[in-house]
Image (tube, rainbow, N blue to C red; front, side, top):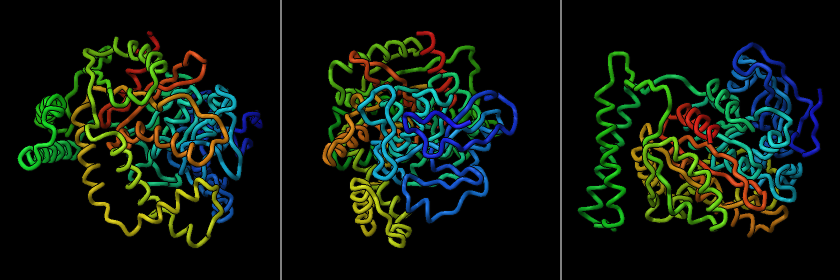
Length: 458
């Protein structure tokens, strides 16, 4: 059966793979972003030169295989931005999928086709990748649920990489229960191990050390940091207790509760400041729904040095690694890129000889801060992107402005490797907005279950 491709979601609407087993995904269909290996299919990665210089896959990507074994049927390969290096969804070579819920506006990228496939009702869910926001941004622009997991929680084998230190496999759906079921199939099962606990302990020591160093040598803005440091101290105490609770089976003891409850919902005021008052008021209604599933709500400024600093750290580390990943192929094949993508790769190439140690240290600091803040039972609530999808056909300057605004919000989970779910909310004009919840490291299934439970009851 050939899919209805009236919205241009699919580069290959005829690609079909029947389910290989039976399970919780019985009867569901899914699409894959055109970067996933499917036996016999050649992935384009959004660029004709990539398509022509690579052979068809000999086997399915691990994630695709798991979904097929659990009863799902693959229907179609969906469009992507060139080599996944964009958040807009406008492809110079293959065109731009139509946003079904905001016609005349971009669908968002780089998992543009996956978002449109779900929003148009062509499939029950779709796989994509998320490095700098490529699941979360198009999910928000197209008004669907989207999930980016903890970095490394889903097997990436068989997927074309962009920046391995930040790459994740994510998924989208129009139904929260389906979003959760896909997570139950793809997410690596298991409790926190001794190895993970040691990482937590090391993280605590490093964070405390940095805090003391800043106090003794720099005395930087102590009054502004006081509330955040108090929270981190409490997380340090809690994390230390968790480490001591590791038993002979290398598992952390956890309470089994009939109903999931979050501890504290942290509302990041610096993130909400990026949204205009009208849209912030709409998103706040969603925040009130989430509040019913938590013990406390607290406002906090998370990036004391500014979200732009965080974004710049992310872009530098991502850009450098992107060139390490694809630079040789680009230099050898000299592919033709769209103007915005060409400019981006040129910039990435310029990072190759630079020293990135300062950015790496800053990333560690941010990651430690966020992981200690959220722990196992706290969440951060932010807008997914600053506003609705921009109009199609913007100039390069406008494209970069849109991208920067989105990345200032999406870089948070990216830098700390944390799971994030985005929830669709309609603006007063009827355009989709996105409300996001970021949970602690490894708390993917807890986050999905909690959002499914709380949001469905609202």
